[in-house]
Length: 247
Image 1 (tube, rainbow, N blue to C red):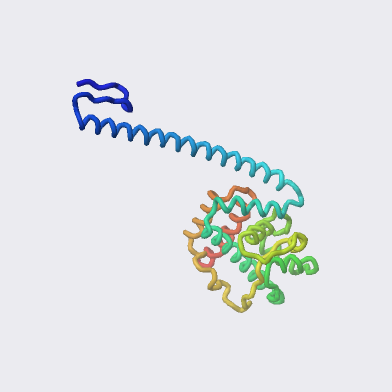
Image 2 (cartoon, rainbow, N blue to C red):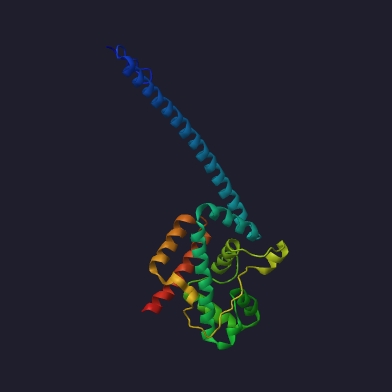
């Protein structure tokens, strides 16, 4: 009895049917290995193509984000990246934090002066603070204590957070001119100002584990540094509030 040294071409002499079965098995294994090598090569090629695409998107973003009028394009790019990085549940969680931050800011402003309970949204504050020095001071003071920048400029936390919210939530279609005029958008607040400071819609945002998960999602699923900073500041502000409520 003799054998060859090459596994795929192994020939067993004098073993009859058993030897033929062994050789067939070896051929099948060799064919599977060949197919696997081809599949790996295909996947490597696809990965390289994705990497090239990612680099191209990043390069276009850097060019777009550097322009003063880049708001709309920048928002669309945010969404393009997030669609591939965050699950629907994670995006929903981050939007809930932004919504709750808005409620928190409004209620703190209301506490400073009850006449501002007529104000139902952050965009309304931005419209009216231009002609209301008291509202301007109250809003700035609240946001400063929460660690939220609120100038309304494209690099401020408030602007970025509401741009993110607008991209991620269904909105009625608007013309480009209308979108530019609105600066940023959120649904109107309809809460009764006499409701408890901790509304029922807070849900599990008061859970420290939820906050930890949100921070993990931001650090691993969001690539834009400005959006990371804004979302982090938002989650920390809400978390800090709930920590005080519990103590």
